[in-house]
Image (cartoon, rainbow, N blue to C red; front, side):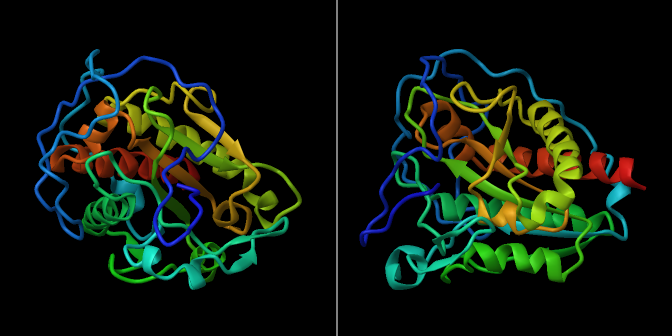
Length: 286
């Protein structure tokens, strides 16, 4: 994510970090087009050889009873039409501590599977899980062909819904040698989110633990500490007054992460990991 627009997507990492050579293998299968996503290229997503296998993910029923009756905002990052409209997504909007671009195109795997398609597919799967368990789900976008909404609007959607919890779904574009997922949480910087720093940290821990357990994906080797990454520069976090985190579900430029994220099996496990974390957090909040 966090890519400048010059008519085409520029693929780069979303934060600083030192890449390392560890990789992990894909436990899923090549993706067919899932709901709301374009089918990735048949070519294997390259980015360095995959070697070490991931931890074996937990399978079996999810306990999602705690989401019943709760309002949950799902924010699939970017949008499929962003790249065609730099005049919109380059517009500056408030970010809580200044101004930043409305949005970006997002990244993609080396075989061309776009982050916007990945995030929307996962969001639909997560929505289905949560609604089946009795939650009211609000989506910040309902297709993958539009533009935006801008990052400040994404936060406002959660605030206006008086959500019990909100989660933003992304895929990273870091150097290919780094792999794994991380959970961004708001950092205390004098923004509206100062009121929910503690709750968002508890949410981040629950989401991290569930995601790691249900997917088998390790925490990031290149950024954050044990999968947690406090950020001061994220408008969607800074402007939120409801507990919120942003999950970089893996590094789409890494071979193993890309293979997992490009598979229907992988995306379903991602959705289950997120759902389990949201439920675990809500269970502690009553």
